[in-house]
Length: 157
Image (tube, rainbow, N blue to C red; front, side):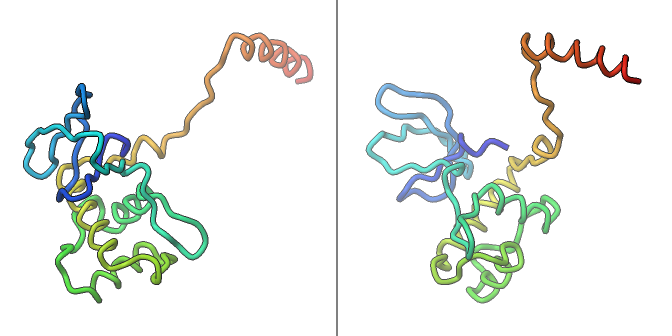
């Protein structure tokens, strides 16, 4: 799942997908209604890849929090971000038990849950590719050094 192409724009509700580069900004598409418009460079935009949540130990990337929600709710939407504050805190604490409750405000929790629900609704949360093992790529140097090792192993066996 690549969150680097999904943006939050300050002052605008919802999330936006980067469509293309424009002369004086970028063209984005709203995930809520599909409308496209130019987001200018003077607007404050944050990629979801860059956002993290405070915890008791270290900051937790938003991607990891979405993964926890995805696992808990089996890829389906969570509770509504419009639920009462105590319910939201309780659910967030179940999903992210070590979040820093003093530095993470209820508005942050609402936003994370709203974003998760939107991405889940649009089926944009895909964690399968991360679970596959990544094999290191062999270069020309690796293949030359690995051949003699194989011969050595055969001799030893």
